[in-house]
Each structure stands twice: as structure tokens, then as C-alpha cells.
Image (cartoon, rainbow, N blue to C red; front, side, top):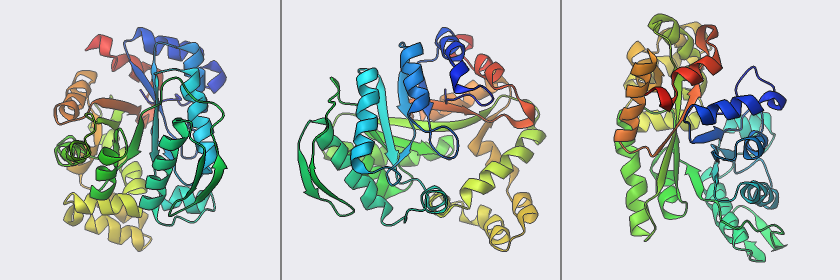
Length: 322
């Protein structure tokens, strides 16, 4: 389940984390965009719910210096030995450039270099290295976790997917349909096999609204879909997945500044592919299709459309109810 839970202050998450454990969830996954940072909610979960595995999907490779990135990840891995999964990716020009004032240059190389640096830092090496996107001079990580955290790489298209299998421990995938998993997962597995690495983990952030009011969900979801699928990295991904014709009108209207027409241009069936909705039973069946097609860890993110109560949705979707 994705955390933190909207509407609940972080200071009041103890009971929510304990309930998540009782409901049968195994993991909590954070993210980092414009709300809580990616590490603080997991640090609280490490203390309050030590039964849970903790993951971040994702920390941007650009927004922290390499040494601070290693320190933050190692600290959480030390607080939750063997239970923390580090997710890293390029993020997007919106988060990196518009919100953080950092040039979004060579995102593939920056992510690759950050993964290589983190792997070396976690091994306790003293690092003096010139990477393509940054230089490190004499850094050694002062806190070395007993168990090196797996590093999953956020991946959309083929280059990042191969990097995730070849140099990471798996991939984090996002904003795709259950059927799309059949295309992207084998690329990660093949790259890992060629590199002689163990079977990689595939984690998917899945957007879920357990509501039977399909019209309401579709109308609300189109705002989220438009916000993401007009970001260049996601637009390129969906064009690569063969949705160029279905999204062409939306992209045109958005570029022209006609937001209303852009939203109206998003097909309902596309919403149904990208947003899991319906009764809790129907939602669980939809999640199961992702797993059948190659997802190892479905990380559910509740979309509170129509005033949906997030914690009630967490209860309705619980594994214990399946």
C-alpha cells in the first residue's frame, strides 16, 4: 500500500500502520513529488510497524547530491535491516526543473551513474570517481547497513528497462496497463539474465479507486491522466506502447491550451486500462492480472475520487478480504 495516507498527519500514522499489518499487507511504499519526502514516512513505519517491508518509488536521481542520497538510503536500511528497498529514477522535467530548479540533463546517464555510485557506497568503498554526470572525490559512507538494500530503477522505455535488469535489482513501473506488463517485464528479465544476475523484482505502482460509480471515476481520473501523460517522458512511453493515435487529440488540445477539450479527448476505455476501479472484488481481480503478467509487487495507490475515504478503501482492498 502507498503511504502516507492523505488526510492523516504523519504524527498520527502509527495506528494506520498497525492496521495495515493487521489487514494482511506486506509492504508500504512511499513516493516523492510535492507532498511528503520519500524517506520520512518509511522511517516512521520502520519504528511503528517492523513487520512491514519498506520501499520508495521513487527518489529522483537529480534532487539530492550523490553522498546525501547514499546517506539517506543507508540510514533507512540500517533502521530496517533487510526490509528496505531503494527505488531511484530520473523523475521528470516538471519535478526536477520546474519545482527544484535543477537542469534535467541526461536523465538516463544520471540515473545509471547514481546506481553505480550507490552500489559502490553500500559496499563501503572510498570513492574517487569521475562519472559522466558528476565527480566524487574521496567519499566513504560512514554508516554501512548490515544488509545492502536492493536498488530498483524506475523504468518506462527500453533503455531504462534494460538498465534496471542489468545494473539494478529490478524495475519500478508506473502508469501502464496490465497488458503492458507483458511487454516491459521480459525486457528487464532478459537484461538481468544476460548480466548473470538473479531474477529481478518488478514493482508496479497501481492507481486504484474501489468505487462502482464508473462515470465519476472516469471523469475524475482524466485529470490525473492528463497531468501525467502530457509530461514528455510519459507521453513518449505511451507513444512507444502504441497509444499515439488514441492520445493524439488530447496532446494537441493540451498543447493548444484547451484543457477542457483535452480531458474530453481521453477515451473511457483508456481510463479503464490505467485506473483500477469497480467493486473491491473487481479491483482485486484487476490487480491479479498485473501479477499474472509479471508484476511481483503491486503497490496500490488509492485515488480518493468522489470523496472516497482512503482508510476505508485500504480496508476494502485488504488481502485478508481476498
